[in-house]
Length: 201
Image (spheres, rainbow, N blue to C red):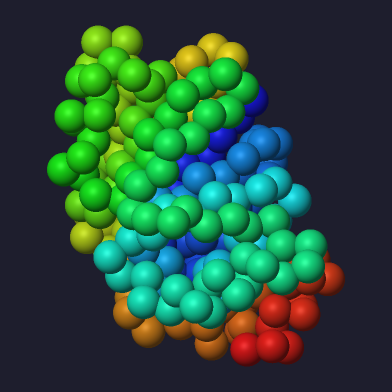
């Protein structure tokens, strides 16, 4: 099973679509998002992907009612955690996923999980503590580090692959839903559902 772990999108729709294009090309089975969407539109995009997405809340996810409403829509492929962390299991692999970096190392040191994923500080970091992967996938936004990144976790091989995005944008003016609407086809997001999203916003 392939799991894409993304974090800290900060409403950068351009970089998000770049990541989703790769995720779809790589035939990923599951997305885990570690929070900080900062825009309900991000949740809408995740909700219509062919693979399920599970959202862990970040400290900048203020539109919780709207995001949960999106997740509860018929045919939505998005689920939401109840907190800023969650205990998950896929393909027999136990995962602790959290938005905050301060929980990561203690949970990895517990040895109870195969992988611990965290975000918040935007810094890509792939470590192993004992037999436990302890990984920050970096930021989709490329806002703090200037690099857009995410990781793919192969549960069968128990391996982490780092993906660095190319052709990213970092300008604040490029991060809005207006930008996404104007460039939706250019970014390769051409599905019928995507055009429906465009008409809603």
